[in-house]
Image 1 (tube, rainbow, N blue to C red):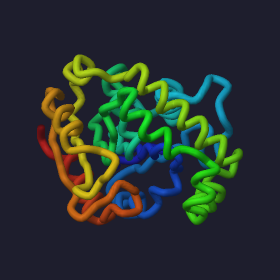
Image 2: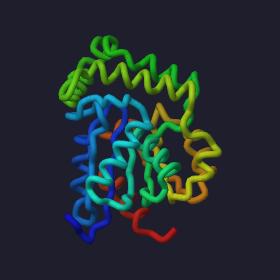
Image 3: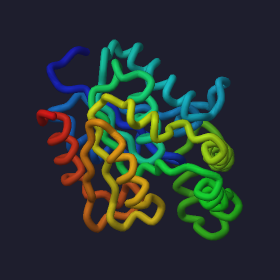
Length: 235
């Protein structure tokens, strides 16, 4: 259905699903045509035969845009979803309106990947944080949540060996971008975010106050305000 509203697409993070965006979608729906997708292997979408990678997820976004006859779309990507959004902005700028990322980790090498991979142990999650294990079980209905965790660990390990976005890539992104992070994020550093911000030709940097890494910790009205402001202002 065609509307006069600006189209915006929400991309979820690793171990996440589109359902996490429901409060934000409700806050944005009056003025935006809100789109949400589950990457393959997440939520109610089965794993893809094409694999489980940033490139596969980006291709799924492009397929979604084609299926919904969207020539371009603004993209808000949380965590890994922000990395997918930046990958799209680098390689498919004609499809990306403006890109907003929140809590996205940009600095991937063997050390940073190894730190994250060590935490992506399904048995350890089940033992140490059983409540989170139950959340993952309820969230990923198309398959076993433990497989989602294991494949995410493999994806991150691969990023550690071969980062898909290097400084030279960010320097070539012509899409206006806003990089956002929480001041209490213990996964994403200010340094890595600011380094990418300074490399991007058209970028803004925004800090969310009193905000940790999980999307559920973000102040929804404040986040919606920043999204509306950035997608409608002159650059």
